[in-house]
Length: 124
Image (cartoon, rainbow, N blue to C red; front, side):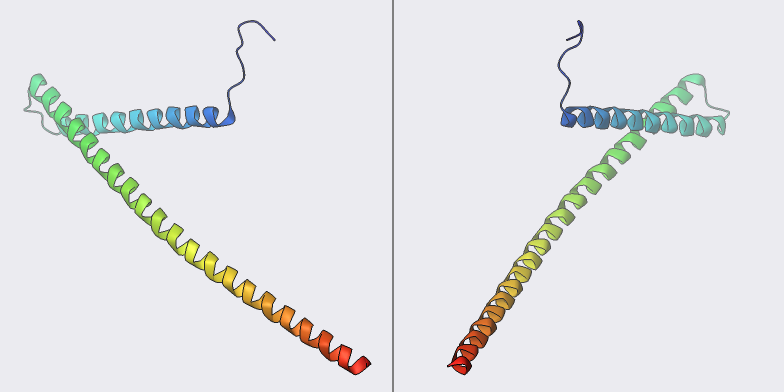
């Protein structure tokens, strides 16, 4: 083993770390975009003092982030609802398919048994 290196991380740990980094970068990009929009808004209001522009920028960014959090939460909740609905439907479909396969297998076995009995009678 090479000095300074620890054990290799599990694949799940790596993907979790990558997902966390991606989320952080996306959040930072969203914050930067909100700041740019706020600055554009303030640029269109030339009568604002520097303190007023900073306050407006801060309030705009906060409201935008709050709105985004609410939207993400509602999206996550809806995704969870849809997942439950799809899983329930999938379970019903899988159960029905299993029943049909069992019924077909029974029918095939009954036909095979009937043909075997018929063949036995004809051979005698």
